Amino acid sequence: MSILVIGSTGTVGSQVIAKLADSGADVRALTRSPEKAQFPRGVTAIKGDLMDVDTVRTALKGVSSLFLLVPNGPDELTQAINTLSLARDARVRGIVYLSVTRSDIYTDVPHFTAKYSVERMIEQLNLPATILRPSYFFQNDVTQKAPLLGAGIYGSPVGGKGVSMVDTRDIADAAVKELLRREHADTPLPRELYELVGPDSLDGPTLAAIWSEALSRPVRYGGDDLDAFEKLLGTFAPGWKAYEMRLMMARYQHDGAAASSADIQRLTELLGHAPRSYRDFANETVGIWQN
Image 1 (spheres, rainbow, N blue to C red):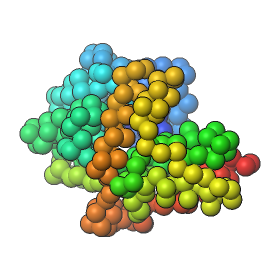
Image 2: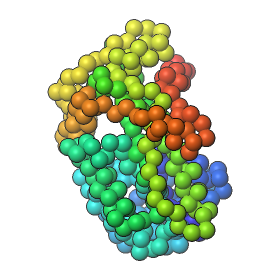
Image 3: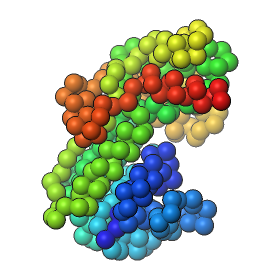
Image 4: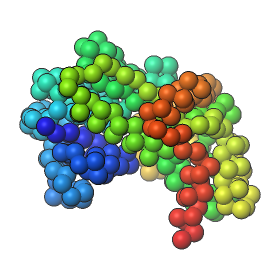
């Protein structure tokens, strides 16, 4: 029996692959280009594309557990629904699906609504799955390097309500723990849902202050101008994606995404340690930049 990882080459998926390989699990990684993939020893690269049903059907043969991460995009919902249907046909016994926090609330943000539709499918079909709902990734802010080091600005317009951002290492740890728990169970396990969050609710000014401390220089929050944010993203991303990120930031500004103490405690129990803090991430990142 083996674990198939879909979304194997991204920030989260690559960490899931590495941790599963370290555990000694039999791991397969779906990728469009196996010849270019650089996976750890023992991981089998499987050629496939989520829009090519036959390749996914083939990849799922003999698979007992599945990690499903579908990148945000216009075809995200079709890819996820089809893949889960194929997994059901293949009698996969354990599934870990990467959704997003507030998937059921931010209904005007396309990838949130797409992921919530997948959650509903999992629930209605009673699939043996763990749904992981991560918040905004700490590691997204690595792209802030130029404005932070240049103009001394933290530019992500997250607003003043607070977002309980999460480290991708905690996401990968949670995914691997649930994959292995399901893989080693004698029978399919009931559905579970975890909010993947950090220990602190972070707003724009607080984030700027953290970076100011880490860099030992003044850093200010760039403000809540969503027009400027969309325009900047549009210089290197498709228009649909720039607008979608604008919609997400608008919801952060209006509603926030602060975790409850119960969510933090439940995640702590799953991880076996407290979620990593943004301050530690910022200090680590500055150390990397300086070296």
